[in-house]
Image (cartoon, helix red, strand yellow):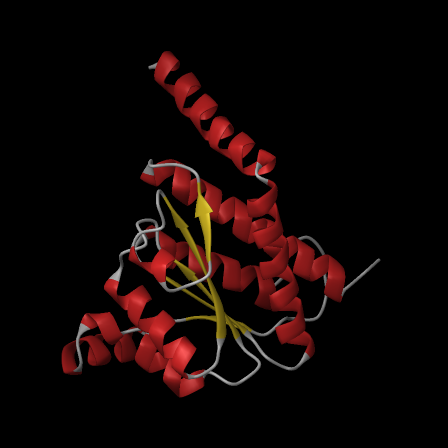
Length: 191
């Protein structure tokens, strides 16, 4: 058991090392942070969405902005799609689960908003739909994904974690998300 624990920690560290050495990936994270800051400065909000564990991550990251990340400061406008479970189940029932995020995005999105979608595989139907809807609404977006980026990599701007392991991809998504939240917080509230 100890060997497994040690190996899992080393595997996680290796993926993070690969991210830290990939200048292009670092630039994508930086660009995402800048897009979020620009959106907030224009009065927009940061909109998150994801499935399963990524749904939890989307809520977690949104809370880092509306609450606090590392310092006490004014709240920042953010929301995670799908948190109104009545709306989510009604949309799923009436239109299909693949529209659970896109329909809500259509209802709440404004020009200066920025969407961060999270999908480990890059093949989640409701993430593909929300990205299509964002594009039709001229809402800028980025996708956190892994492996080869899946279907979303063909049509969307992606930050792709260099791993095929779901666990390593998800660990890296929350790390990247928290880095972005930290950059947003420090830039919006210097000192």
